[in-house]
Image (cartoon, rainbow, N blue to C red):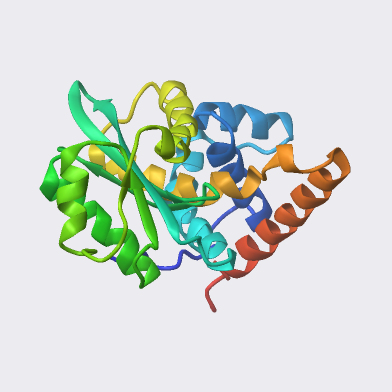
Length: 239
């Protein structure tokens, strides 16, 4: 399902306020009420419900715009799932990342059997329009069974230690899950994490690989990209 491009038409606040609220919500472990308070400190009066609607309306469009700017992902894909609890019901959050930690896809599913693994493995291949050179998973048997049919000639590496890249990529989600006191529904979790996976990594450059000056320069560039995209992705509709 393709999300329609949102418009700023009818908004009482300018695009800078809208994009700043969306940035605060997806970049830091904050709720809508904290975003409301931070904006009030800056002299802008918005309600927490307004912040929530802005994030729901524009978050995915911003994330898609940032993804289109990224270079092509690597050919080594790490796939893993983690248990999450939604209203007392167990669900599994599946995630695929490349060797550099770039998020390829996320999917919330009720199971982690072979059928669920096949469904998830097909999603990043469809989006990237290619198969990975090396898929890396843990040792769960359903991973191997799901891999054999769509990628019979591709080497599959199943080892717990090799899959730390995917396991570590779950940490920001865990942090947000605690701040939000859990997700309300599987659909809400899917919508939030799809946008979160596109926006949050954009503002998390690999700082340990750069000097302080280099990190500041890279962060400034990423803010410039964010400002440009948020102003042009959702242009006001013509009157």
